[in-house]
Image (spheres, rainbow, N blue to C red):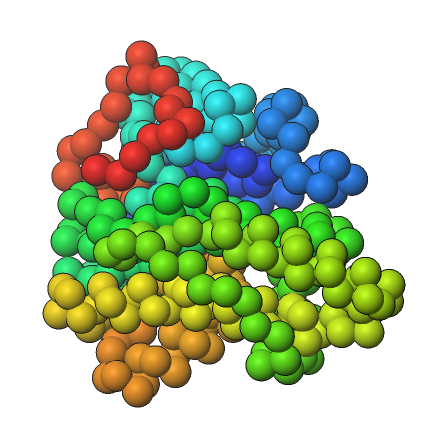
Amino acid sequence: MQPVILAIESSCDETSAAIIRSGKVLNNVIASQNVHQKYGGVVPELASRAHQKNILRVVNDAMVSARISAGDLDAIAYTRGPGLMGALLVGASFAKGMALALKVPLIEVNHMEAHVLAHFIPRFAWDDPLDASHKPSYPFLCLTVSGGHTQIVLVKSNSDMEVIGETRDDAVGEAFDKAAKILGLPYPGGPLIDRYASQGNDRRFSFPETTMPGLDFSFSGIKTAFLYFIRDSKANDPEFIEKNLNDICASFQRHLVGMLISRVEMAVQQTGIHQVAIAGGVSANSGLRKALTAVASKKNWDAFILPMEYCTDNAAMIAMAAHFKFIEGHFSTLDSSPIPNLEMI
């Protein structure tokens, strides 16, 4: 059976819905929440309220643009976690209510697993979902990087993933945003650092290395070092940031990307797996994308980099994960609850 599934994503500050039919994602409707910008970060209560406001419109837009009626749906999928509890509850409650009303199965999806499985979304409408070209084959390694997570995942199948390395403290996306805040840049600051970095000298400034055992990461130290670097530099020159913004951003970005790539290189060496993918919001960073492409070319890896629209939180990736679950008969019950710290399989 080739199902028609409505997928809902509401883990943080993006309300999104998508329709997948026969393994092909028909659309990917996203409503962003600009209310958080003036607070310098996502405010959970405001996020959940915005989800309540946006979810009906987003789902309706997805259904209408796909020319799908409620009676055509074979299942409803939603993000169970990880994420913000209030935000997750909005998506879960809507999905449960709709599944119950339509008498169709409910599918819960792990947000981080969905980021990985976004690599299997057909790129074009004419693509065969079973076509393996331009997609990693199992097993492969995936660096999942976002505001809340930094992980190296050994992907053995669509339902068997193992985290073999992760951050011991803060995520790399949080480090980007904190550095941007120190520089006085508006939220979200990570993309702005990337923009300014493209015009700067990434060898101008250096920062101390953080070494962790095995394949794990740590980003709390670099945030502190960056804070002191800016504080001391401004003490000598109050206009230091304005005069050197591009070079500061470029140097800081090169340092973080270098930390990520060095661990990926270790993972490849330890596992012998030469297929490497990146996923998550930070995978949209141009410095990381270029660095992975360069090291893959040098070391003869197969690198897989997502289109920008599938890097940040979106329902298309939830839909792809739900498609696999439907085919394998993995459904959830109405009494399942969102789990903010949900771990991978």
